[in-house]
Amino acid sequence: MEAPLTLDTLLQGLRTRLQDAGIETPGLEARMLLGAATGRDTAQLIAHGTDPATPEQASRVDVLCRRRCAGEPMAHILGRRSFWTLELGVSPACLIPRPETELLVEHALTAINACSRAHPRVLDLGTGTGAIILALKAERAAIEAVASDHSLDALRQARANADALGLDVAFLQGSWLAPLKPRDTFDVIVSNPPYIALDDPHLTRGDLRFEPHSALVAADVGLADLRTIIQTAGEHLAPSGHLLLEHGFDQACAVRAMLEDAGYTAIRSHIDTAGHERITEGLLAPEGPA
Ligand SMILES: C[S@@+](CC[C@H](N)C(=O)[O-])C[C@H]1O[C@@H](n2cnc3c(N)ncnc32)[C@H](O)[C@@H]1O
Image 1 (cartoon, protein in one colour):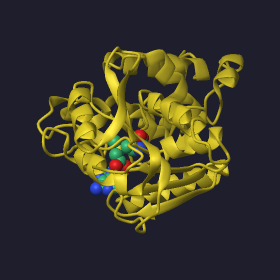
Image 2 (cartoon, protein in one colour):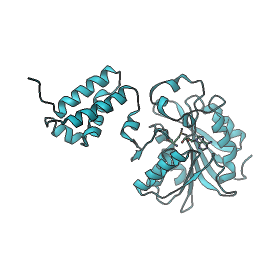
Image 3 (cartoon, protein in one colour):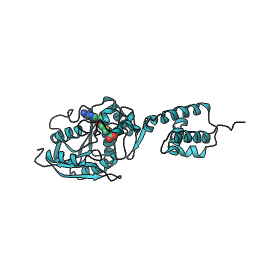
Image 4 (cartoon, protein in one colour):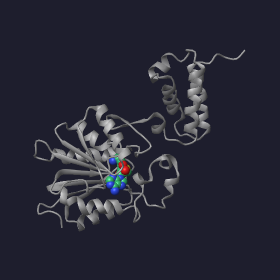
């Protein structure tokens, strides 16, 4: 006689299939997928592992497992990803927020703290899911938060995330600083722009295969968007305003040089947990852009 189908047997089967497909953390992902298929959290799955599973649950598990084994990102399958202290909705129109971007949030918070205004104005360029600006607004409610993206679909997701979290952010559509009015200035401008070179082999691996090219790739060995932002942000920075940029692990030197050419001072890079210079910031000289 066949053993009855339980939540535990579904979990075990899922873990084995994910492991066989080469997934690095099959146990964790099996629990997350079973949770999504059954509507139960991890604690409930542990406490009720011997509960019978329905054929509908088994069929939902099978569909989710096939998608994951085909390489689809967990964030797309679940429709969400944790970032900073927030749970964010994610769609295929957006970059999936990455843990290394939390380093940008940390340094942006330091820059906000250094600002003497009661309501520092903060701008996030290329906001995607809204990850950076929503984390900043969640930490510092007093900031006036503005974010832009050229993708309307990404902005829709960012707006939905802001509404779900009850955070007040003004969203603008357009290329980098173009949607801003002349003389609209900010104390802190942050951006995690596309910075991967067109021919980078990583684009054909892992989650990157499922994310929008326009969120990942930039011309000129990945530096074109960083250059555009550095050359145009000055007009929208208050005197002594901060510009903070995320970039590739091997681009810090080029980014520092571009900031120097554009007249920034106090230029420094920050190292991520893997030991790579990942964030570079500069202060706009009080006399303004070069
Ligand atoms: C690397 S993703 C970063 C997303 C998000 N800030 C994050 O850190 O998760 C780059 C973002 O820049 C946007 N983007 C690309 N080119 C742009 C442009 N010319 N103007 C404005 N946004 C742009 C993309 O749509 C994407 O959302």
